[in-house]
Image 1: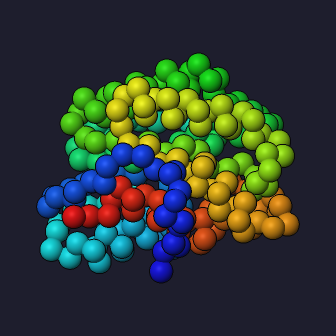
Image 2 (image 1 turned 60 degrees about the vertical axis):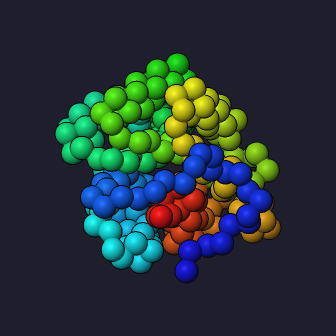
Length: 223
């Protein structure tokens, strides 16, 4: 059973979607989404839950996550991996690597200016194609809930960009960052760096995948 999140949380904003017959929901992102298509991953959990809730509807769930991707990579493959597939709903879950890669040897993150410019362009192109967009904030790079993970400050700045884009462009926002911090504040009593919602501070374990699936069900819960 998916995790039950407190009803008072406001991590997701926007009206619930009414799923239609023939809907194609595409999940665009990095390794978190790529792994999310595997058993107990958040994409797989959503497929199971939506099928159970809407047994009379025919719809397709598509995973389009690639390990290591940043917003720059999504922009490059947007045509082939998204637009040409003609999805009706696109869930974008990106931003972790754009921040995390600044701290990794032989890697480079994405500047805030480029992150905002390209994410706005990606959202606009998907909207122009006729699909609805759900934009997720990046979740965590380290699971300490008190702001002491090394990249917390930078990650919050990129989350603020995603929130502003969602507001400016009139799309649904799933604020996973807010949901993760709320959960970790309640359940990470020892303020551990990992193993509450992730395996390594970034990639989701079963509990993390369930949390993401449950948050997205606020939008994709069916009719």
